[in-house]
Length: 507
Image (cartoon, rainbow, N blue to C red):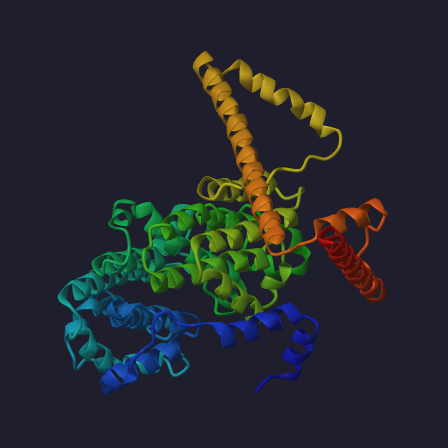
């Protein structure tokens, strides 16, 4: 049921309400599930998908039929692994072997796990994990190998960090540790998905030769989530912001949430957002290698939402007070723009990069670096989709820029200058020929139309007489009737005169 707060919000944000209506009314999925062909276990897997993820569930279910089930199972398996890692009620002696051996349970269709804490939201997924394992063993062997490999590497990485966390509350000390953690929980996801896309022949195989692009896709999403969820993580006494960053501003990470440290908190936040922004251009590069529309939608929607979330968080102290997120209306608008083509996705990245640049605080120590990061996004977009419109200069700048062509001319070779002259001459000659052809065509059409009119009895003499008399406007109905009557009388008198002359000549 819609709350009164939502009604009040959308009453003054009509553009967002319009986006919601447009998305729900006009969006057509590239592919749709065929539930009639699904087994009971597979339907249960899709129920788990909708239960564990509201944001990914919709786009996963619109994937190409070749990838629908493998990606769904890939997500659920990693969600189960993440549920064990996030459960703070499990001690490290139990958690570590579970994480390291989780990939071995994929082949065991009888394995389940019911020792998660009662408050763990995805507990049911592990309680009924045998359903997932049964469907996993039905998919093609190459997909199984990819999922199992990623699950094994991720589980070992999570176990390493969980072991360190048991000894020290803040395990992430350096930026390098921070990026390594994001690699294990998200960068490997990007690699696994890319391998699935290429195996299904729905993405460019060259993506596998650029591991930094796959890495950035996962890092950008994970770092955005870590920045946004700082308040929620603080309430649960777990921290992912590296000590190397926050120790520049406060002695204890909890001090960032004190009102007297507001400015320091925003400066620390700027540095964290800067780390994420540096990955944005590589995400756009990756998306250019995706072939199929449903796969493009799948990778593009989370990325545009991520940069919109960074813009929402940037210089916004509310994120230290409560968990913030983009509205449903903004999400629908982003999904509409992200499910068409790469150029519209680039437009969204440019839009939010400019918003971040406008919010950038000159007193912030990272002001220059953030401005450069936003500029790098725009520059990369220009290399893919150059701006075609002419740049409008304010008054006074025209003279300053007038010397630019002359300066550029000095550095051109004689061959280039000669080629430009010839091209200019050819362009003028082409314009002349086009104008001449148009003139000849119009002349011929005019002659044909006048000739046809004369052949069918047009009285051009009357038209010329009217022009000589100064009648340039069309005659009124009475005047036309009088003119017709005069013409008839004139014709009758001419006939009578001719007949009289004939009689006299005969006599």
